[in-house]
Amino acid sequence: MKKIVSVLFFVLVVSTIQGQETLGSWGSNYGGVAASFQNPALIANSRLYKDINLVGGSASFYHNVEYLADTTSKGTNFLYDAFDLKRPDAQLKYYKQNRPAMDKGYLMSRELGPSYMLDRGNDAFAITLSSRQFLSFNKIPDVVAKLIKNGYPDAQTVLQGSYAFDQPMRAAGMAWSEIAGTYARRLPSTSKDLITLGVTLKYLIGQGGAYAYVDNISAQVSNMSSVQIDRSSFQTGISMPYDYRASSNVGWDKKISSGTGLGADLGFALIHRRNIRNEVNSKQYCDQEFEDYDYRFSVALLDLGSIKFKHNARYISASNTTPVSYDFRNTTNTTEEGINQVLSMYGITGKDSLNTFKKFSILLPTALSLQYDVRIADRVYSTLAAIVAVPLGKNAIVRPSQIAVIPRYESDHFEVSLPLSLYEFTKPRVGLAARAYFLTLGTDRLFSIGKKTDYFGYDAYASVRINFMKIFKANFIKGQCQESSKSGCW
Image 1 (cartoon, rainbow, N blue to C red):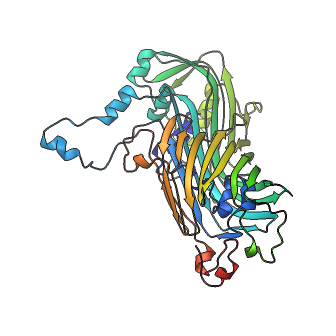
Image 2 (image 1 turned 135 degrees about the vertical axis):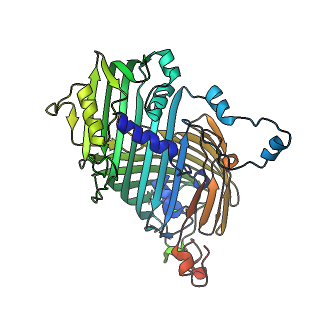
Image 3 (image 1 turned 60 degrees about the vertical axis):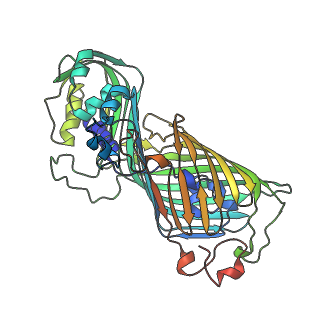
């Protein structure tokens, strides 16, 4: 089990992928096909009647596990050298004052491939191809996190000696591809209030995944070489595309799928329009007019579903009420040896089908998405948004929760937003995002740029939408049919 959790933990700590939920794009009426990721109902009232996307991407990284040393020289360092002063030791301050009681971390990224959206007036649909990577660990006691990272207990851990944790710990990670279809429908309305409904159905192809869930554990650490586990209960699964028997030069499996599954997003939006339009009777899609609104409330349940892994899959469920011992000096060279070591320690044989399987599932990072978007003036809006994690099982990936206020200005050519957020409902952040034509750059933590000494990590994101609008000088913005034959707006 240690090897499985260590893989997840290590990747989360040292990964260089950075970014977040790209809050700067939330609420935008120019989101096009990407708006379906926030809420599938939103594509039914977009400023674009069509969106053809070639490539795009976003990523995120957050943790409170390890101090990130600054590898660059700060501009103020010469002052300390000139006056022969001792520089402040940020790392020492972190270890002495800021060690968290519970460690957590998240890493998520999405690479968007060829995708298409069409808003036909009364309904809209989209097709997207993307790949995603998601890792999370939550409520890991700091002493356990250090033990996994170091591979042995330190002097402080031995000094305390006895530990008991009854709060569940969890870690999960997965890489998968999605083939998704979205359909959104405007319900008939004779008032200013318009309701749109949307659903996204996904076929999921898993490249690999692992998870570990510890219900409880009580242990004695009397020296730096071993631990006695008095009681514990856990379950874990792993499916990776490499040979578990290999000790070095890991040979990656050429099989592109380790498992498959189904997923879905469900969305609802209530739009209070500025004017009433009962039906869409446009002769051409580009004749449509965007229906501006005073406010829009939307709610979505995202990432329902799971992937069942069968290829190279190992699953273990174990518990004990009588002491078992683990010697940190008994190192294992392969994943297979590590799995067998756990089975032997808990007295599980290969014939014990109740405790071991060669298949298991990982649940997607299910979340509830809420948005309240208000029009302040022409082209000026503000969105109150929230993402609330809803893990549906012990084998679920956990999505980070947050709440944000996102004022923005949007036009055909340019868009800028200033997301103000509370990450995990506790960490205040100030961000900045801007779009010029098809390029978006931004960060949800503006003041962390170039500052690695923040032990909560650092981030930035970029999204490049290489769109047919510019290549073929086509205009996909509603109400601009005559412009489409002249030059592209994007």
